[in-house]
Length: 103
Image (tube, rainbow, N blue to C red):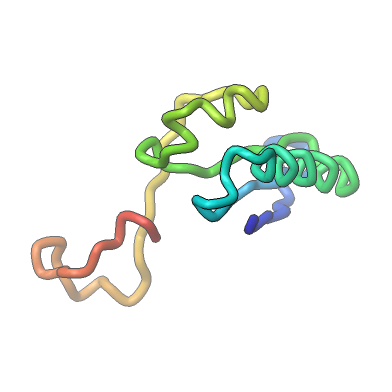
């Protein structure tokens, strides 16, 4: 399964495609499915005339630790993501009990 997002980026002067989710069931891993999905994403980005494609992933994910994206010739960049969950303005971090690290 893969989720792609197309975004117009003024600072890039064109479109950016983001791979936001790329998941292969554990029993199907190691069979080239992730590589095929990545190739599809690259072809998709070219069809949309994107100037850049990026991957959004967590450092704790196994595919990141195995170097999957580096092997696919993606460059790791020094970047940070900041999020604010809408609707949580009235709560404090210590009062939130659900895990939001995967959101």
